[in-house]
Image (cartoon, rainbow, N blue to C red; front, top):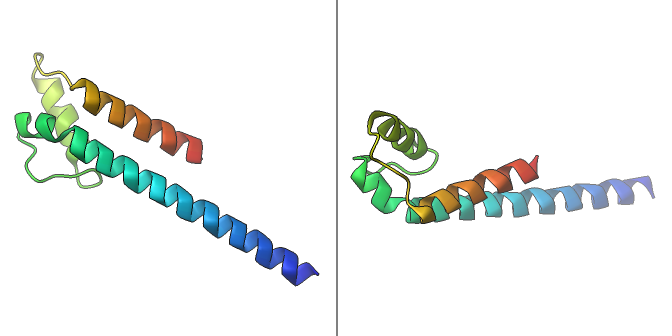
Length: 88
């Protein structure tokens, strides 16, 4: 009985972790897509989320007062942050 309970708990935990990883990956892709034009404006090249895209965008924004994130980019970043916070 004890082993069955442990196996069940382990399976449930692994499914929740897998689901969370899928959500985070989907959020990263959404940010990459939504922020593509912003990245081009900021000369961020081929950077993606996880390889410096957000740092590059924020550094450009800090140096250029006229630069503003597009609404789609802001929404994607905010959703990604909310999902990451909800995961914890």
